[in-house]
Length: 165
Image 1 (cartoon, rainbow, N blue to C red):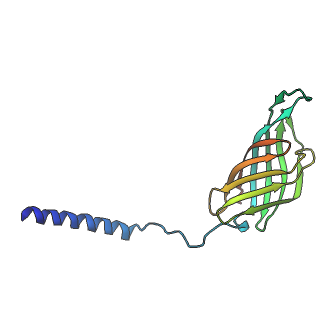
Image 2: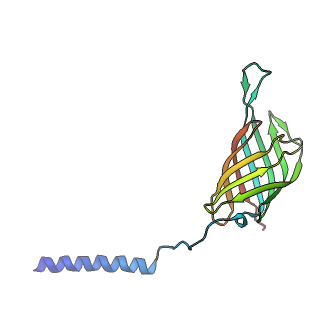
Image 3: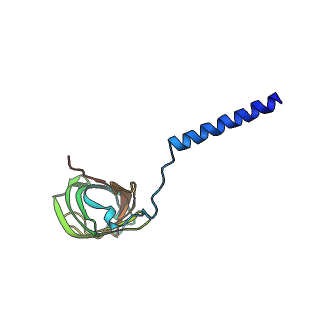
Protein backbone atom coordinates (compact mmCIF):
# COMPACT_ATOMS: atom_id res chain seq x y z
CA UNK A 1 0.00 0.00 0.00
CA UNK A 2 2.83 2.35 0.93
CA UNK A 3 4.55 1.63 -2.42
CA UNK A 4 1.42 2.42 -4.44
CA UNK A 5 0.98 5.75 -2.62
CA UNK A 6 4.61 6.67 -3.32
CA UNK A 7 4.14 5.62 -6.97
CA UNK A 8 0.98 7.72 -7.34
CA UNK A 9 2.65 10.67 -5.62
CA UNK A 10 5.61 10.41 -8.01
CA UNK A 11 3.32 10.39 -11.06
CA UNK A 12 1.43 13.37 -9.65
CA UNK A 13 4.67 15.33 -9.10
CA UNK A 14 5.83 14.62 -12.67
CA UNK A 15 2.41 15.62 -14.05
CA UNK A 16 2.41 18.90 -12.09
CA UNK A 17 5.97 19.67 -13.22
CA UNK A 18 5.18 19.07 -16.91
CA UNK A 19 1.95 21.05 -16.65
CA UNK A 20 3.76 23.98 -14.98
CA UNK A 21 6.45 24.04 -17.67
CA UNK A 22 3.87 24.06 -20.47
CA UNK A 23 1.80 26.79 -18.84
CA UNK A 24 4.71 29.00 -17.87
CA UNK A 25 6.78 28.42 -21.06
CA UNK A 26 4.35 27.54 -23.85
CA UNK A 27 5.68 26.27 -27.19
CA UNK A 28 5.58 29.11 -29.76
CA UNK A 29 2.87 28.63 -32.36
CA UNK A 30 3.28 29.28 -36.07
CA UNK A 31 0.76 31.79 -37.37
CA UNK A 32 -1.58 30.13 -39.84
CA UNK A 33 -1.08 31.28 -43.43
CA UNK A 34 2.25 32.96 -42.75
CA UNK A 35 3.83 32.05 -46.08
CA UNK A 36 6.25 34.10 -48.11
CA UNK A 37 5.53 36.41 -51.06
CA UNK A 38 7.33 38.98 -53.21
CA UNK A 39 6.74 41.44 -50.36
CA UNK A 40 9.05 39.29 -48.20
CA UNK A 41 11.98 40.81 -50.13
CA UNK A 42 11.78 44.56 -49.80
CA UNK A 43 14.60 47.07 -49.47
CA UNK A 44 18.35 47.11 -50.01
CA UNK A 45 20.51 43.99 -49.85
CA UNK A 46 24.20 43.29 -50.15
CA UNK A 47 24.42 40.49 -52.73
CA UNK A 48 27.54 38.38 -53.29
CA UNK A 49 27.97 35.89 -56.16
CA UNK A 50 30.87 33.42 -56.13
CA UNK A 51 31.55 30.65 -58.59
CA UNK A 52 33.34 29.23 -61.58
CA UNK A 53 33.27 30.14 -65.26
CA UNK A 54 33.71 27.10 -67.52
CA UNK A 55 35.48 28.03 -70.74
CA UNK A 56 36.84 25.86 -73.58
CA UNK A 57 40.17 26.98 -74.96
CA UNK A 58 39.85 27.47 -78.73
CA UNK A 59 37.99 24.22 -79.58
CA UNK A 60 40.75 22.07 -78.07
CA UNK A 61 38.53 20.20 -75.63
CA UNK A 62 40.59 21.72 -72.82
CA UNK A 63 38.49 23.64 -70.33
CA UNK A 64 39.54 26.36 -67.94
CA UNK A 65 37.66 27.00 -64.72
CA UNK A 66 38.59 30.46 -63.51
CA UNK A 67 36.74 31.78 -60.48
CA UNK A 68 34.56 34.85 -60.38
CA UNK A 69 33.41 36.98 -57.49
CA UNK A 70 30.85 39.76 -57.76
CA UNK A 71 29.47 42.09 -55.09
CA UNK A 72 26.53 44.38 -55.60
CA UNK A 73 23.95 46.48 -53.83
CA UNK A 74 20.53 45.17 -54.88
CA UNK A 75 17.14 46.79 -54.35
CA UNK A 76 14.05 44.57 -54.15
CA UNK A 77 10.88 46.67 -54.50
CA UNK A 78 8.51 44.22 -52.74
CA UNK A 79 6.59 43.63 -55.97
CA UNK A 80 8.94 41.55 -58.11
CA UNK A 81 11.24 44.20 -59.62
CA UNK A 82 14.97 44.15 -58.91
CA UNK A 83 17.57 46.82 -59.60
CA UNK A 84 21.20 46.91 -58.62
CA UNK A 85 24.66 48.36 -58.85
CA UNK A 86 27.74 46.17 -59.17
CA UNK A 87 30.15 47.68 -56.69
CA UNK A 88 32.97 45.19 -57.09
CA UNK A 89 33.96 42.00 -58.72
CA UNK A 90 36.80 40.05 -60.22
CA UNK A 91 37.22 37.51 -63.00
CA UNK A 92 40.70 36.03 -63.56
CA UNK A 93 41.92 38.66 -61.13
CA UNK A 94 40.63 41.52 -63.32
CA UNK A 95 38.36 43.95 -61.46
CA UNK A 96 35.01 45.01 -62.91
CA UNK A 97 34.05 48.64 -63.35
CA UNK A 98 30.92 49.61 -61.41
CA UNK A 99 27.76 49.19 -63.50
CA UNK A 100 24.00 49.27 -62.86
CA UNK A 101 20.78 47.65 -64.04
CA UNK A 102 17.11 48.36 -63.34
CA UNK A 103 15.23 45.64 -65.20
CA UNK A 104 15.80 42.55 -63.06
CA UNK A 105 12.98 40.48 -61.61
CA UNK A 106 12.28 38.08 -58.77
CA UNK A 107 9.56 35.73 -57.54
CA UNK A 108 9.12 34.57 -53.94
CA UNK A 109 6.90 31.48 -53.63
CA UNK A 110 4.66 30.67 -50.63
CA UNK A 111 7.18 27.98 -49.55
CA UNK A 112 9.83 30.76 -49.33
CA UNK A 113 11.84 29.57 -52.35
CA UNK A 114 13.13 32.44 -54.48
CA UNK A 115 13.91 32.83 -58.21
CA UNK A 116 15.87 35.92 -59.25
CA UNK A 117 16.71 37.02 -62.81
CA UNK A 118 19.53 39.50 -63.38
CA UNK A 119 19.78 40.89 -66.92
CA UNK A 120 23.07 41.14 -68.83
CA UNK A 121 25.14 43.97 -67.38
CA UNK A 122 27.62 45.80 -69.59
CA UNK A 123 31.25 45.15 -68.63
CA UNK A 124 30.19 42.58 -66.02
CA UNK A 125 28.08 39.63 -67.29
CA UNK A 126 27.15 38.96 -70.92
CA UNK A 127 24.15 36.66 -70.30
CA UNK A 128 21.03 36.61 -68.12
CA UNK A 129 21.98 35.23 -64.70
CA UNK A 130 19.53 33.10 -62.72
CA UNK A 131 19.63 32.78 -58.95
CA UNK A 132 17.58 30.09 -57.20
CA UNK A 133 17.48 30.03 -53.44
CA UNK A 134 15.48 30.15 -50.27
CA UNK A 135 14.73 32.79 -47.65
CA UNK A 136 16.63 31.74 -44.55
CA UNK A 137 14.39 33.90 -42.36
CA UNK A 138 10.65 34.60 -42.69
CA UNK A 139 11.23 38.33 -42.31
CA UNK A 140 13.26 38.33 -45.55
CA UNK A 141 16.60 39.37 -44.03
CA UNK A 142 18.64 36.78 -45.96
CA UNK A 143 18.49 34.65 -49.12
CA UNK A 144 20.98 31.90 -50.06
CA UNK A 145 21.18 29.67 -53.11
CA UNK A 146 22.80 28.81 -56.43
CA UNK A 147 23.68 31.00 -59.40
CA UNK A 148 24.09 30.11 -63.07
CA UNK A 149 23.88 31.45 -66.62
CA UNK A 150 24.45 29.98 -70.10
CA UNK A 151 28.02 31.33 -70.42
CA UNK A 152 28.30 29.05 -68.23
CA UNK A 153 28.82 30.58 -64.85
CA UNK A 154 27.93 28.34 -61.91
CA UNK A 155 28.21 29.10 -58.23
CA UNK A 156 26.45 30.32 -55.14
CA UNK A 157 24.96 33.57 -53.91
CA UNK A 158 23.98 35.19 -50.67
CA UNK A 159 21.87 38.33 -50.21
CA UNK A 160 21.71 39.98 -46.79
CA UNK A 161 19.45 42.91 -45.96
CA UNK A 162 21.19 46.20 -45.28
CA UNK A 163 19.57 47.77 -42.23
CA UNK A 164 19.71 51.48 -41.57
CA UNK A 165 21.30 52.52 -38.31
